[in-house]
Amino acid sequence: MRLQRLWTNRTLLLMCLPAIVFFLIFAYLPMPGLYLAFIKYNYTDGIFRSPFVGWENFRFLVINGDLARLTINTILYNLAFILIGNALQVFVAVLLNELRRKWFKKIAQTFLFLPYFISAVLIGLIAYNFLSYDYGVLNSFLVSVGLDPVKTYSNPNIWPFIIVIVYLWQTTGYGSIIYFAAIMGLDHEIVEAAEIDGANALQRIVYIVLPWLKPTFIILLLFSLGGVLKGNFGLFYNLVGANNTMLYPTTDIIETYVFRTLMNNFNFSTGSAVSLYQSVFGFVIVVTCNWVVRKTSPDHSLF
Amino acid sequence: MEQISRSIRSSVSERLVRIVGYGFIGAFALACVLPFVLVLGTSLTSERSIQSNGFNFWPKDFTVFAYRIVFENPNLVIGAYFVTIALTVLGTAIGLFLVAMTGYALQRPDFPYRNRISFYIYFTTLFSGGLVPFYLLMTQYLSLKNNYLSVLLPGLLTPFLIIMMKAFVQSIPHAITESAKIDGAGDFMIFRKLILPMTTPALATIGLFIALGYWNEWYNAMLFLTSDVEYRPLQLFLYNVITRADFIRNSSAASNVPLRDMPLESMKMATAIVATGPVILFYPFVQRYFIKGLTVGAVKG
Image 1 (tube, chains in turn green, yellow):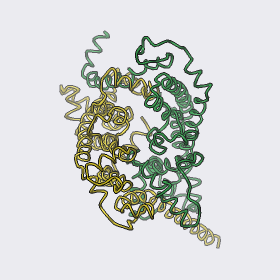
Image 2: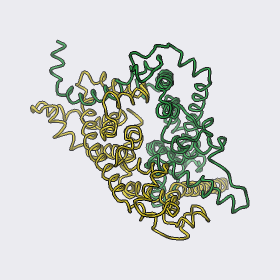
Image 3: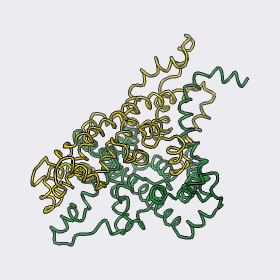
Image 4: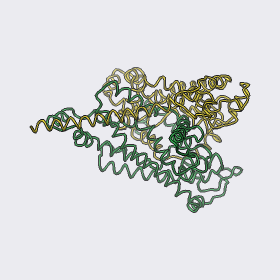
């Protein structure tokens, strides 16, 4: 009976087979590798003969404060990205909807989406164009108005602002598309009726458009909150630079830390411990967020 | 009387919203393109001018010297272009076919395993082994270090694009599949002969997402292609020009320009323009596909 069902669906199963094998190799096979987090890995003994140390790697990360610092950095950056990002996206979408000149709207949108499509490497170079101590546009400007140039790349305190601004610069335009599309779905008759009743532009936005966007806003917010422990490696790595230790206190996130443990220190066990921590807590957060989504709007929940 | 004052009030607010709208959107749109102008301007500025005036939007001392140096050793640039184009074409062709096929099968309402397989794919976004096990798998167990397959393979499929494809195909009535089945067509035949031609806009969207991913790919290349590989993908090539002094030294030797005369800064910008140019040139013509993908796929999976 079971076999028969497999047999009747063999073509569809075969069509899924490449994807099944793909995710098995590249996503599921690495998972047991997180066992590395519980051993003291060394090259000569390999995974199976390196000594088992239990929670020792985690204890080490907690005691030296790395885990707390990485968690705080990663979460705070993501909260800033998500909250400011979504608010700005709504703002842009609402304003775009108010523009009447078609050509202006077209060109503006084309420009706004552009930063989303370039590589992280170029993002880093663009930031360097502005922030370089010797040649950067920022310092040229400061000097021209009689102020002292700033040493951006050795001052950790300004980096949270820089990273958030660059993130917003890159993603706001593209992110506003969803909200803009949602506004397009708003019934025109409602807007017209409000106009006949004397609602002005501001009232139209505050009492009709924004409430209309609220469900989309909440859903997107909850979905992004699910990923609050996941960092954008490319952005941070290219902005901060590979070895700028001075900036680590405010710019080091889980992804960049794990990358360094692997590529600079060959400390596979510590890196795996951080990854395991990230995956487990990330999983709990996603499930919680999805549970909230299911409570508020069952149609949108993921599982 | 009340009517008039109300319409005045409304026109004031109307105007305010317009002014803020055009002002803010205009300024933001400019802020989105000006950095590219800055990179282009600097790439065309002489090194001496950069040293005294800094980076500039408009070259004060115009020269194409940096581009000459970049192309003086054309092997590396052309090699990088070739590698990136090959990876993009191959990756997009294979990836698009697999995404479309999987997406179609997984949205078939009469396919009893669709939920289980969908979850199997979706779960990989919830939990992952992280970088270290992935790195060990790729280098020690699959022996893909210094192999272009290490860049090609991991980029072929993403859960996000499979979900997007499912959403696209769901808009095609299932009755079409059913009637073709009654006529005796096999599932793969239905997919190839009926569904694929009907989903060309979806395929364009997904294909562009995959292609963009390969063009901008730099992470896997950095992890798995070491200096033993002569030709790296464009973005890694750019990364090396930006960050590695030995790269500048090599091209100084190749172009017979003494190291102190090398246009260090403008060369980075020129390489960036060479590596990004095609994306910016193509982008205005294809952006609507990226918009379509987001509005179909993101809201409901």
